[in-house]
Length: 195
Image (cartoon, rainbow, N blue to C red; front, top):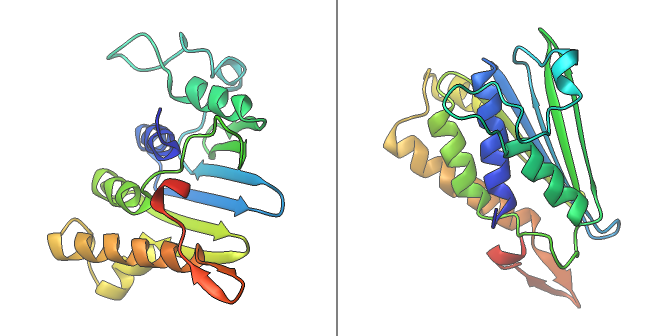
């Protein structure tokens, strides 16, 4: 995949199929540690132990629409190709946690992609499932939580054009703010391709 955000979309759809009520997405970028870590955690039905050991095998899938499941195997391959690692843990009835770690400056690491559009797509496709997104860039934190937004706006769904436009702008501006880099007293915004 050309962007890591596409992996995120694919894996979070697994959470929806697992009937999760909450999906937590954490992205940690660290220049000091030269790392980019993506953590996706849900409270869905979980994966039985006998399926977990070969879950990244592309020919192992529970989907009935096709016999090949590439999402987790591609994410694992992408992380390991960039000097990082992949981990998955799951407890039936509790949920699943997926971690992909990348060497941030590795030549083969795909860009993160447009996270504002990615979050918007997630909100639109999640239905009643809530999203808690936290992005830490060099210890500067941005948080987006659909439960808090629904409570503040006193609505059950965020799938209204005005709300969705606000979400895109809110996420875009929030990420831009934490990704500003101060160099020699000047503030430089990273380009989207760097994220």
